[in-house]
Length: 228
Image 1 (cartoon, rainbow, N blue to C red):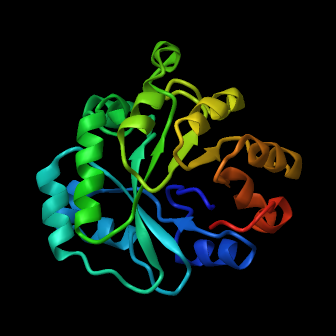
Image 2: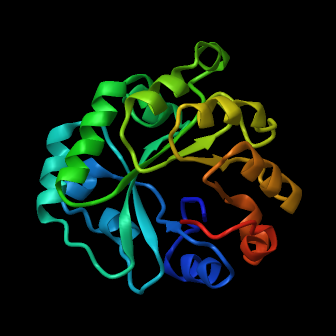
Image 3: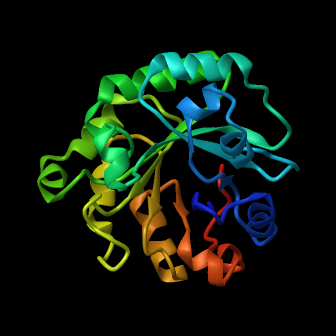
């Protein structure tokens, strides 16, 4: 899967990666409050112009804003559902209770997923391991996975305090898989050997971000099996 990346994963780049083996792509993140107000710039982020399989990534905490947005949303060819952002580490987002700050709000996240499902759309979740090492140690990411009925969970194996310079912690994936949910690995997936090891653990798939910018062909290079 191609990761959602701000200013990168537009229609052209999503299609390029799809043609090079990505089974599923994602738009850059859009705020549901702005989408519900029909702000042009935010709507442009989620525009799908062709058949490339794409999930729309959205961020927000208020049920009323999701309800308003979904009432006016019309699916197009290529649209494969929504992805909830529970991973953005931006301090501004976290102060507003968005992004990685929502990992602890299991009931609210599940309510949002159910609302999206009732509207007739699939919903996945992308999350980090918590805001910091303490939350990671308490296993709040596992509580979220266990308590939410999403179609799959993309687990970025870092906390919100960590950066891309910190190594992703692949050791968390076995516990994630033990929840019985579909788990997609994210963070530092760069080699065929890693992909094979992740498949051996029981991962549903792998999501690639930065590595695809320099090499869009990485999806075919790392492929172990078809996403299904």
